[in-house]
Amino acid sequence: VSSDLDAHDPLAAARAKFSLPDGLVYLDGNSLGALSTSVPPALSDAVERQWGRDLIRSWNDNDWWSLPRRVGDRIGALIGAAPGQVMCGESTTIQLFQAIVAATRLRPGRTMIITDGDNFPTDQYVADSVGRLLGLEVVRASPPDLAQKIDERCAVVSYSAVDYRTGELWDLASLTAQARAAGAAIVLDLSHAAGALPVSLDELGADFAVGCGYKYLNGGPGAPAWIYIAARHQSVADLPLTGWHGHADPFELEASFRPAPGIERARIGTPPLLSMLALEAALDVWSTVSLADARAKSLAMSGMVIDFVDAHCPDIEVVTPREMDRRGSQVSLRMPYAYEVCQALIARQVIGDFRAPDLLRLGFAPLYLSYADVEHALAELLDVLTSRAYLDPAFARSAGGAVT
Ligand SMILES: Cc1ncc(COP(=O)(O)O)c(C=O)c1O
Image 1 (spheres, helix red, strand yellow):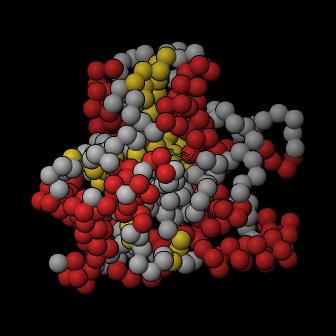
Image 2 (cartoon, protein in one colour; image 1 turned 90 degrees about the vertical axis):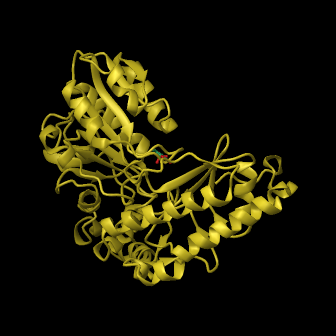
């Protein structure tokens, strides 16, 4: 079956644009994307020519100054943002802080921030900190329960598009519409969506969004993140981190901050050029593939896993929704010994990850995975379960294996 699917896969050629060890099935692109073959030459050019020879002149000669905006626009094309609304830089955590504070300041007098109690920890911690800083109450409500909590006291709704544990994709149109109807601003964390599935930020009418560069965008470990600020907010957005790169006239070196017009105000300080050049190179692949094809392939793969588990693994609970429009790009399986099963699979060159207390997460990055890879991973999973290979003490949590 898988050979047929691979033979007709419109994304089959993209696999050659990634460098992965032979024999490895990588189902963790939702945590750290694979190495794009465009990155090593781009990095060596960045280090040897741009830094080594051109030195400080590179800010102009190699367009270092415009890099965050350039990369931002390329990410914007993947999330339905017209040019000039996405700025690349910093970490997701910092961009969340920027976005939640700026969104709160757009709604003076309101007293509440709503976030998801199952949101990624950093999203909750930042919401709590902004609450303390600006004197707002932080209320937890999972996206399906937003309607029960939201009212005219709510300044900001801060949600992730995809639940990182269960892989559930929330209805972004409905969340955005509910926030807008209550007069609240919405901040979306697209870490598990950008590059994995189509998102239409402009069409949704979202206010702010943020996301990682190192998951489905394949920018590499610690790759810079990004922030989206809808054009209609840019002239008034009051971002809390006011660095000199976001100043209207950075080289006048004025004593007081005047924000740059447009998305330029979302710059902070000197960006991590090497990491950003790596991310820029990793984004090249998107000029040869379509996000719609990637989404279709990811859904086919997650569907394969769900069907297989239903048919062969009665002790495993599929936590990820079965409806395609409610599924991100991963399948989460609840099982006893999830940690040990994950380690046993890694020993067999099938890399997924474990999320406490009992989930095995399998992520699908369709640009570099084949259906044969998924079939192979499922055969190994079944073998690990039926042979009870996971009971080997080497895979026990106490053996101290790294949690990937
Ligand atoms: C939804 C979400 N937000 C944020 C992060 C990470 O933030 P940072 O890049 O600042 O570590 C993750 C990491 O997995 C995530 O899943």
